[in-house]
Amino acid sequence: MNKALSERKRVCVLFGGVSPEHEVSLSTATSILKNIDRSLFEVLPVAISKEGKWFLYNGEVSNIIDGTWINSDKLYPAILSPSRGDGLLVRYGEELIKERIDCVFPALHGENGEDGSIQGLCRVAGIPCVGAMVAASAVSMDKTLTKAIVKELGIRQARYEICSRNDLLSGFDSISSRVESSLGYPVFVKPSSTGSSVGITKVKTASELKDAVTIALRYSDKALIEEYVDGREVEVAVLGNSSPEASVCGEIVPGDEFYSYDDKYINGVATLHIPAELSDGTSDTLRRYACDIYTAIGCAGLSRVDFFVDRETEEICFNEINTLPGFTPISMYPKLWDYCGIPYPELLTRLIELAME
Ligand SMILES: Nc1ncnc2c1ncn2[C@@H]1O[C@H](COP(=O)(O)OP(=O)(O)O)[C@@H](O)[C@H]1O
Ligand SMILES: [Mg+2]
Image (cartoon, rainbow, N blue to C red; front, side):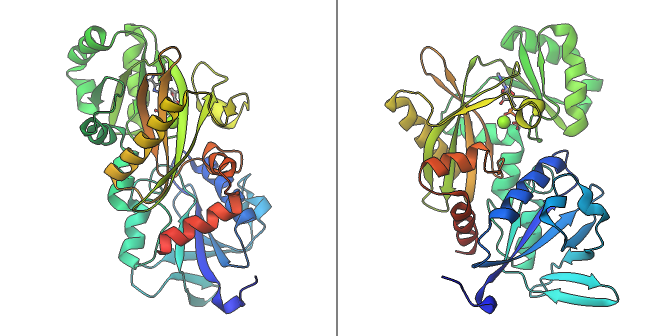
């Protein structure tokens, strides 16, 4: 049923941004803008440049993915005002207009988008925002903080060491020997707070450790050095606020040596299996763990919770949680819900409704 234009909720879709996942965000936003139900929602697309400049973008959706939106003549400088009731302040030529915003949909990944920053701005402005709010976003973005909470739940996760920039300058030898004695090689070295496998290295010998840590520290203040877990990669989509629901489990079979950035977005060799072939008991446990972790962290709206599952014993090991997971129609999160009977456009509607609850 078509709603009268005036009744439609105004949704501000934010995309781009300063994070290393800028390009991923462009593809998420393209999918959202193509599929959002325009009979229910009026959309205000807001593009954020790599330098962090905000613009209302009234150009073609097809010019988002390749970044050519930046040359459009339909870009208007805009800011989301923290002052309640102002909404989006847009400069059209000489005129400054207040555009009402009913909900923000951050089609952003990583730094600023997924780490609680944008969520904080929305909270100050009093505008509902899709997904987890400030604390849950910040905790989920920082893998070391997530681990502290998941430890309390008694769910197994990879053993790890943390290395800060200071540790790298003085004290690296003791970290290196702890890695050798308590983790053994290979290890995975990752920034504590990026996504999309940016800055991650699989380290096979002690001589490669320092370089890998240096790379990870380019992206985060802390590097995480993790024991290698040789398992299948199984992911669960969670949807809801105070009583979240878990989807069926999905399995990723990486095309690369591990599920790398190229594998995720460039090579197209990784395959998704939905539902994952697992015993009923293991699937149920994974789905329960996913909801327990979601609730313990205080997530809202959506998250994808990722695990390793042992190939022989099906022993479960938690890997990470993503509060704004990959979100094109071929991404795991929407595909899991599609399998469960919620098509992509309806999923968008539900997420906006959950935010406005
Ligand atoms: N401890 C580990 N053991 C084995 N593989 C790992 C480990 N940690 C990460 N990986 C591999 O690296 C990929 C990306 O790591 P992940 O922790 O999920 O970071 P991101 O937030 O960038 O997705 C995983 O999907 C997996 O393929
Ligand atoms: Mg991951």
